[in-house]
Image (tube, rainbow, N blue to C red; front, side, top):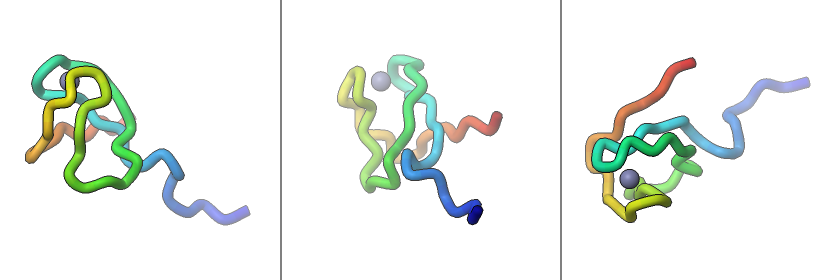
Amino acid sequence: MSKSAAPAGTKRRCISCGAKFYDLNRQPIVCPKCDAELADPVTIIS
Ligand SMILES: [Zn+2]
């Protein structure tokens, strides 16, 4: 079993609405809840 990057990307928290979501390795990162573009997104390490 290889442990490569998760397909969902990195877990983020929207600085605008506080929603937690995965960025899907996309750039720019856009919040799926409020459509805010996160230039400096918060990374959630859990
Ligand atoms: Zn948001």
